[in-house]
Image (tube, rainbow over all chains, first blue to last red; front, side, top):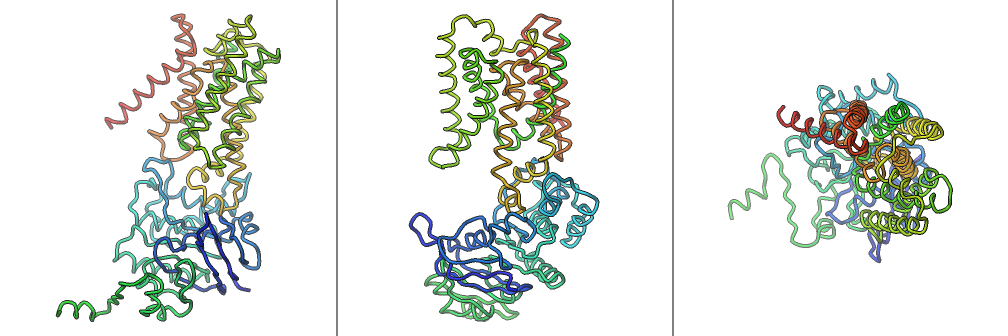
Length: 258
Length: 257
């Protein structure tokens, strides 16, 4: 069964076409990157998939069910929102944050048990931040917070991970390690992953497929096919130059010689 | 005086627990708004001859839900809708009171607290409502915690965010009304803010914040009642000033750590 199936979805908000004619079919266990400019609807699309926003028209199914039904169960999705502002002195430790990821599985009117704590610690270890468990979440660095948040998303044993700009707050060097870790986990657990990012260069190496979104899909398919001038212009507008950094950066060489 | 201490401790336990979430969810203004709106609810009781505590509970719940409904529609901001409900309730109260001239002494008791006039019935009512509030809060504790941390993650986890938010508003309204007899309408919102604010200075996790907040509320109440008895000063003011003094002491201590 397909993990996500979207047919001709439209979302109109205050007279504006935020999402237009979106069609997407994603198999289970696949890792898709959604790239595009800010304001192009990436976050909105993720929120429609999660069931947080209702589309104006079109169909969307998650494992054959409507997102509203999935929203009631709480254990299909693991979600990393784009901006998670937590005050530095909010009484939540790293371990508490990850335990929150278990609440969907634990259910209402029940208290967490040993098994939940074990799973939470497992996820913290997988993300390499187990030693931070007693620290206050609000006092961690951006990169540490992201790792903890992903541990939280994983703790609920989700089938689908929805990550909105997960590399925010992580420096360029850290990002490589981060995507590498994410890819490793995804392969190990066969998670279906939908990741929104505007870091097109970095993610093309890690994702199975890519979709370029600026209110509508300008390209869907093989990641390398997105690195095409025509696609980039459609996506980002004119005056875009694509710099691909390999061991020898030809573009930078050219600019240097000019 | 015994009844005062007993109800005082019940009220501190409830206020301490609720205060944690009032402070974390930044609902201090809603707390102040609902507590002043209680004046309208009490006045309805005087005017109609029904027990003012009962009318106040229903009225405050209605105001809390009204604030939620009006600000949810999005046309009016939450703090504006609080201001509107707060002021109109007080105005309603003033009109109704002016139409029922005989009750000025009782009214004074509701505005400023009247621990000596707590009836046996009121003790039982406080016990019952405090029990319901505490059990309810404990049942939905983790959901409230997650919603406070991030509403969207809470929704994705399958929690009915709106239902829990409404539940908390009802809890808030009920907590305010049962605290009225001890500290009075005018000061009751202090008990919903100071214990939680003090606890947040020291707590690293939710359970600690709750324990410290409840403990602090109880200490302030007991000490405040004791001081009011010793020096023959108004109990409501005594409790709240004690709480404030303890808060500033804790803040000073924390700053110098």
